[in-house]
Image 1 (cartoon, rainbow, N blue to C red):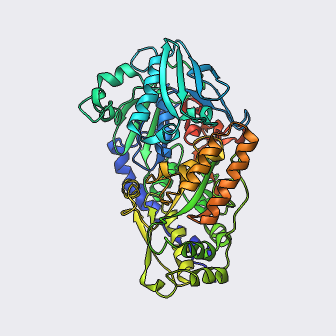
Image 2: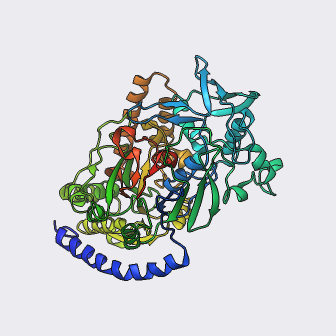
Image 3: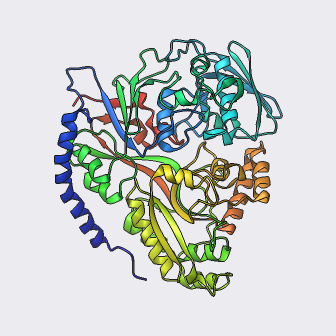
Length: 552
């Protein structure tokens, strides 16, 4: 089969891109003059600015945000109840706002002792009431990471100024691990900014205000927030450990075009790129003008999601035909040479993973599967809309590669660019959800159960993490049993059964296990770029209090 793009063709594309950079640099000059990009100050001043990019929008309300840009913001603005361990420390959690905890034998009652002396950005001292408020607010709003807790948490109560009791309605074995996603809000500040809304006496629960500002105790606080730029400044009364040369200001910039991003690195107006450039672009940056490539291991996977309710994808034989028609190794060799082909619906680095992939490149099997589908006689009457996120140009190339493979077996795929905001909106309804999309999803905590729940449970349908619309009660029941199994060995065995069950349904295509790659300036000392110091939980590797801006 003829590949979509040869290596030489890609080289020509990027040669053209590099030529455009000269023009872009001229344009950027006017932006610099206008003050949009701040150049790091010299070593004679105390200001240390860290700038990185992610696709907008970011949601800095802990009850709303759940994507990478949001998680990367939340970890800097708020403190979680417990903190995930680094790879070197293990795969568990360590004390943070909760200094210690106990649980009942049946795993249903959890008692947490809350750290004293932690100040919110408002000056209020954090206490047990704030912790209970934060959990109850998340459950009531029902967005963001609420899906982790809604099926299990029946109550969260402060039983004293420094004691919180959380009661579960049924066992949830990874409960403690999941609490890295419970960020603690200043309840007094939130209540003071509540306006009319849908939550009874709590009005809007402060959602309008928290979309722009923060009510946290994290190492940074919001200075300004717009659709293009979130500026956070260091909180001098932060209680926790910080690196000696920590940033005094962190700017999260809405991801520009890849050519602009490269030019910003070249001119020193950006410290860390987004993880969405192509491997070839990273290679072009590596070692030039004081830039290095940071490989930050995270337990995530790159999927081609399929809307199983939309014809012809409602037929498993069509889905399997597509799964067999893609030349996985060719795609990765051509566009993602630093990645590894996935072998399950969860990445191999996650605890509880099972190698169970039945799909590989085989055009003959693809044609046989298509011949068994109910659409075999009229497949040419259908086309599949394949959305790719417009902020990540490399995704268009692999979507087009896949479309070329599908065309070889007679299936038409329309490759469509969509902004992230529209994609999030479209997938909320099965009717508006596209036929397919290429999306990377990270584990929310360090067990396979995290992705198995986020990706395929009925509770998470209609989110950016789950556009397959399986609505499979058998799977939901199996997942509930697995997550409620307190014995780890038994739970991991059940995770393996769930992975095999999903793979047999073929609701997605499993492209590669992803290692987050960013280009960074050499004066940026980023400890999480070291494998042993990385944190296997989305967003935590952008914990900016530990990143140092060295003299340059």
